[in-house]
Length: 256
Image (tube, rainbow, N blue to C red; front, side):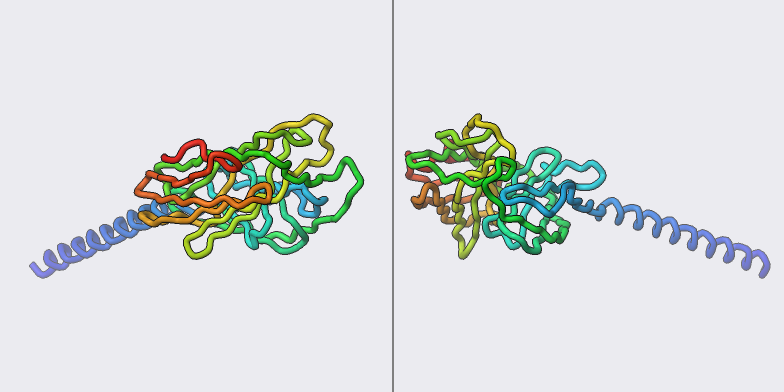
């Protein structure tokens, strides 16, 4: 009888140990699914550049750069141009910068530190140059956000006037301080080696921080040496803009 009890106890302990191991395996699998490793950023082009040239960044393992929100620090006069696969970053001067990609859903982020060397050169058609914003130009901004990342607001931009070079883009600085977002458009960047052809300027415009729910923000835009002011508020996935200007800087829609 004692032997039978001992065998039964041994079997019971074995089953409990097996169940514990299976539970641990399940928890381990669950943890790996719920906490996926965020992919790394790669610098896809050289970081010793001519003034006005861009440095290209990608995300590893074929992930689309367009699915991430991108930022650079320090961000003064840094311009980011994003498409589906890459991000082009124009750095204003030599220095160390941190470029960050943030997942629009999980809000997790990864960063890479780069040393950028900007060679100040001029008088060469193969060197990118800057062109001042022409007098009387009008900037049209179209607000853009996604339902799964409503805290992230950006704008699609386009000038009324045309500028030298096909493929030019607007250079701007951005700042967020005490509930006020400021976008300061400096000039138009003409890419190196461009032809005499011209086109309207623009590109995606990003705010410098997330937009909190049910909070009203001031929006200040400096364009062509003039300052334009308004406000906006996010409610859930919806945005409403109070923008009184009908010239200079125009919002193509005042609600999302």
